[in-house]
Length: 419
Image (tube, rainbow, N blue to C red):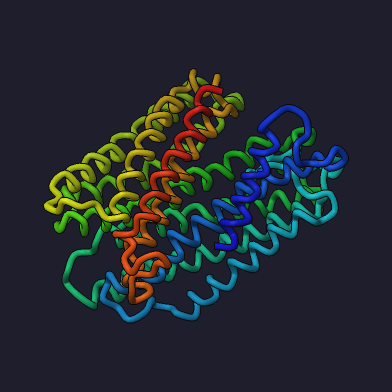
């Protein structure tokens, strides 16, 4: 919660600064702070809000419950992975006040991140080591989850795994496959910065594009690592609200498997402007648009589940699940548009891209997080916690807040498609 407040305040600072021409918030002699703000906004929101919340939080709490186990396989490893997160966050946040700071974007692209002239090497070190610790934490959790499922999930019952469990399985597989690549890329970045290696220095036969390949080979599966647990939460919510199993359960599992495989093969669609060959662009463009097929399957199955709802009222968690479907469909549609190479080259690094990934990643994942809170609060707290009424489903305050929240989101990000 603390991490999300910091990340949100940084985004508010960015919006205030852009609200009109000239300097609004950032002082004239400290203009680098603006670059610093969106560097940390991206890193904190992705690595320290959504991942620890959806994957680490709900995964650690509810995976053993869904498997009928008393605890995860390695509780002490679990504790280590939890304790690493605040340490990593402190390291990343400290880069804000370290010398000149590191206004290099959350992707840490060289040669900017390896240039000693324009920034502080210490600050880059803090961000890199913070992200590395966060990655180690996620890696430990993934090994823990897969071991728990493999050992306890098989021995503790013959009932089939629920969709949330399957989501955790596919997420853990992606994390274990891609995190070492990111760690290697970041290590090479630090070596370039301090030990004069030339991995990313084009003047000495290095290649900055190599870093982009290494980063996005993790970075694109990362967005599915973030959203798959949200898929699991939405499936459980709609299943409970409709009083039946999710429509087309096996196809939902197959869709998550397809998303896992295809999502790991499309990393270079983030790099259409770096000089890829035409055939390479065509491949990445085609596979990118193919991801819409399993994703569309999930959307239609969720809607089919909800339309068979025998209950007349819509609880708060169901309302958030429907909001998730609506926003995710909008964001996915713009994703198919951006998957086209010619369009992507024109729209690269524009607000259209910002609007796209905020719809699917930020708003989809954050609304999944909120939906999970309202859905699981009875299980987590033993009662329906709310300061206004005893039951959040009946709270007019929270219902009004959710509607205002949804319309605020739409008013913030839809105009970005036109900028």
